[in-house]
Length: 119
Image (cartoon, rainbow, N blue to C red; front, side, top):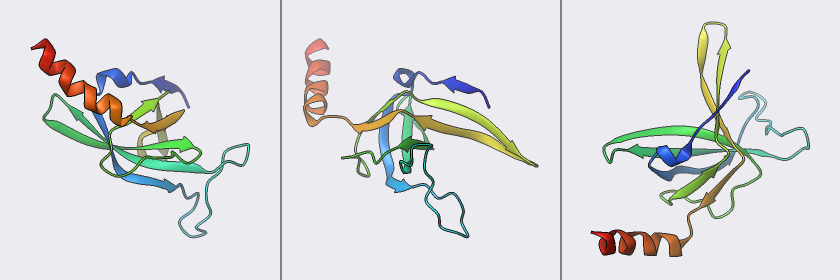
């Protein structure tokens, strides 16, 4: 499985659509998926808004619980990679990140002021 790095600076605004949840390795067993070191893998649904018009939701896996990430909050995704997969007649793209963190409130507060001052 080949990983494809994703340039998140080109994705526009990223917001948490569904708060972090432990990823399940099997629907029947309800077993929580873990990495090689035994750390829980979490899934975060992230809204990607491009061009101010189109919105897509992607599910991103990340090792360890992303602290402070809540629904509706703007987030920063670090080390995002895409993987294509196929199982039988099913196929798709999955996403994994090194970290998902909330955008600090100070960064949000200064962003509109910087835009207004530059206009």
